[in-house]
Amino acid sequence: MANNERSSRRGTKPSQTFNKLASKSSSKDGDGHSLEDKVNEQAEEEPCPRWAEKIIQEITSVQEKINIHLPTIQATTARIESELASLTNRITTAEQRISDVEDKLSPISESHKTLESQVDQLSQKVDYLENYSRRNNLRIVNIAENMEGSDIKVFATNLLKTALDIPADQPGPELERAHRVGPPRDSNGKPRPIIIRLLRFQDKENILHASRRKGELSYKSLRFFIFQDYSVTVSQMRAEYNPIKTARSSVPAAISCKACGHHG
Image (cartoon, rainbow, N blue to C red; front, top):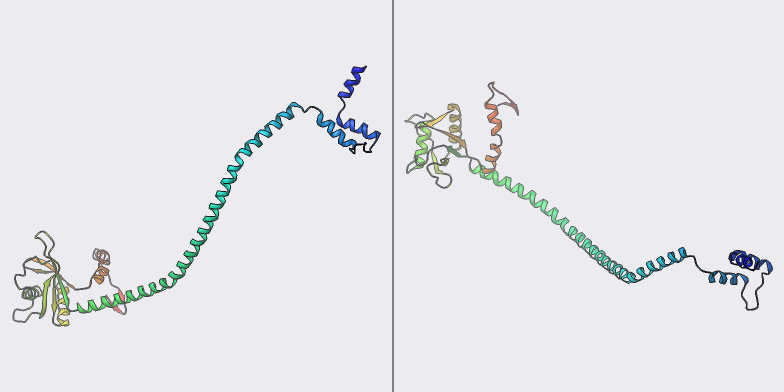
C-alpha cells in the first residue's frame, strides 16, 4: 500500500497538485509566496523530457552560431549601407551634373540648327554661283589623250566645226579657253574630258541644240559627246536619273508628258 501511495504521488501532475492545494487554501504562506509560485517551482524541479532537452540543445547550438557570425553580419551590413549611401550621393551628383549639361546644351542645340540652316542656304548660293559661272562652258567627253596637239583651243574649234557640219567658209564658235580636266592619265585609262568656255552664251546654246539634232557625233571615226558643264552637286543629282533615262530609252513606244503647260 505504501508503494501504491508513492506511485500515486509520482503520477500526480503539477496542475492536479495545484488544484488540490488551491482547494485547501488560496492564501499566502508565512514566507510570502503564493501556492501558485510553489507549484511552479515544484514543476521546474521535475526532470525535463529527453525530446525537449534535444530541442533546447539544437536551439542553443543555432543561437551560438548566430552569435558567432552576428558581428561579421553586422559589420558587412554597415559597410553595405555606407557604400549604398555613397553611391546614392554620387548618383544624385551625377544627375545634377547631367541636368546642368542639358540646360547648357539646349541653347547650343538651337544655335546648331540655325547654323545648319545658314550653311545649307550658303551652300545652295555657292552652288548656284558656281553653275552660273559655268553657264558658257561645255564638256567634251571621249576625246583621246594628246589628240589635241599643242593648241587645244584651236583643236576644239576645228572639232566642233567638223562634228556639227559648219561650212569651212564660216567662222567657228569663238572660244575663250579650253583645257583638260584633272591630272594626266596613262594610255590605258579613260581620257580626260575637255572643258571649253565660249565667249557668248548663245553660241553655247546653238552648239547644244545642233549636237542634239545630229544625234551621234564623231571626229576621225571617234565617237564623242557634248554636255553642259555643271557643278559636282548638280552632276550628282542628274546622275541619279540615269536609271530612269535608261529605262525610258528601252521602251519601244514614244513617251510624252506635259509639265508646266509644255510638252516634253
